[in-house]
Length: 435
Ligand SMILES: Cc1cc2nc3c(=O)[nH]c(=O)nc-3n(C[C@H](O)[C@H](O)[C@H](O)COP(=O)(O)O)c2cc1C
View (tube, rainbow, N blue to C red):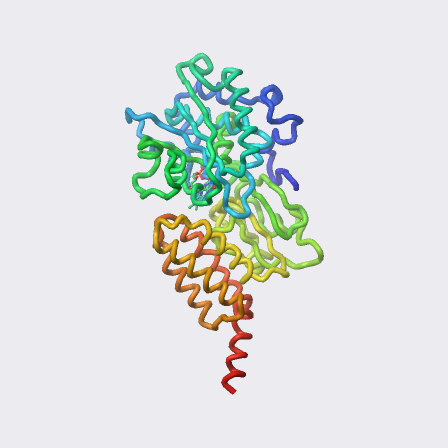
């Protein structure tokens, strides 16, 4: 498992390799909490938000929403309590980057939380993680205790009136609880169903109060922005996608791992075939899902020789998305029908059941996939799958429905042969029977 920066200095991962990097005394020698002090003692909250706006930092949880803009939506004059909620649910298949921040540099996240709370006027931060991350939450809890004992968390921090508390909390392993409003319900002790938007959490979130929900990696980028300035962060990446991003790479590459790359890295083919060591065992690249299972699958022909830039804009031009940065690489032994069936079973299992298109639709999708896999496929089944997707996409209550539909739509479009081969034998049998 490789962890390295390519095409940029290690920023997010720079302290990962230190011995005992989770310990405060170790990371203090490398600047931990200096930027929280700088922000709280020398900058106004508005100035912090301005730097983050300038940085072109976009949410690393999947949607890529501009972080500074989101913070700017929090009503400054609201008499209500304000909250920062960190989304560490990380349940998107193929995604395993946030866990390394917990495991290797929890104080980086906590420092980011302090600065972010200060910027949005929050005194309380909840760090929500999937239940399976219990061993990582223990690391985070220890880090919070250390930071509290050292005076970085608690009352009147850095000799100012700014106070900030932090709490870790867990879900029970439900993918839907990564969706920000379902997460807030779960945090409140309710069932993890999504909420209607608007109102957006920035206006009415946790307990009906203004709440910023941000991904772990998003907030871990904030100390660097305070140290070097928003313009410098933007310059690490592209005009519209500032900074660096962590990509978790799994599947058929020689060196799976977590890679920090500048936004706009040139290019996806080079990244897979050279930086990640290429495809092992003499096989060929067949397909890549670049941003976690919920984005469109890309055939090798859309990557090889195409100079796909690795940022929000570049991947959209190439027919997919950055998503969470959970890259799944598949060689030519993979049957895309089978891999898509597998993903669809995941989405059916994880559909929360709240809305009909997603609950019923994902169930029908699995039924059709299973029928085809059992040898009872019909040639019109590919169209039937697309019709069911059409009845889910854009019609479900939250984007989980879209996330279930997109992999199927793109798989059928880009790999029709992999679907046909499960259907044609049946047709041939029909023809024989008719004779
Ligand atoms: C089904 C579903 C699952 C999601 N899971 C996660 C997750 O595990 N982590 C995450 O940060 N965002 C996840 N998101 C996105 C969040 O709803 C939200 O956009 C994000 O936490 C905002 O933070 P950011 O702006 O820093 O990305 C998910 C969205 C959906 C629809």
